[in-house]
Image 1 (cartoon, rainbow, N blue to C red):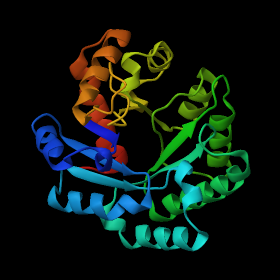
Image 2: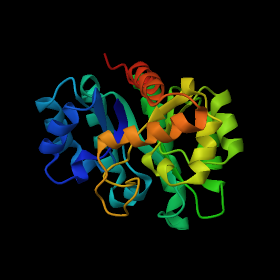
Image 3: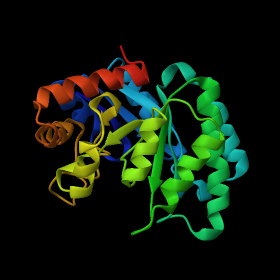
Image 4: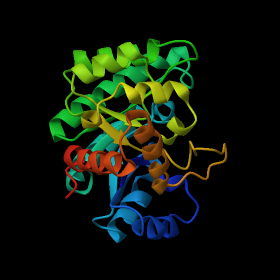
Length: 255
């Protein structure tokens, strides 16, 4: 099993979590959402080479915290650490957290990350969160990806509609389902329409525990998602795990 998107920086005692995950999994990818956490996670990766992998990005909600100069320096830092990372992100748009007067700047920064991922030939890990009852955010994300000729796209914690899903599949994007699938009929329906060949699994832990609202989710809980998907597709849990693990290795170039 490979959890392609978790946040070890937000977990208490990440070293012990990594130690437990080693007993149950092939690898975990920690996705840095705030540049202030980059050194902590890269240090954790250094201690756990070949098991902990890192994707560096900037959550759209965090964009407003930093000046253009700080973001420029961060992008340079990412370039200079190319060999230490497997992905760019998470990055994207968020229409629940980012106020209207900040959306344009968030788009501009997102475009810079799209271009960076292409330049570095790394997969791009996308965050897109709609306002309730709307698909405007993910619609705009997909448009910006298309307009900027994005390559090797991973739609993290996918929660678009069926039209968005069909478009993503046509573009050969990777669709990643988080552990919210264990309790969301919408996500179960979307997973049923997503070929295993295009699917990845993640937890977004410590958020999105299958049964609790507490921040207690852990990377190995993707096994619970695999059970749900297996039942939907009438295959075995191991088939889901094996294929999504193979996919994760291919997209993030994890041996």
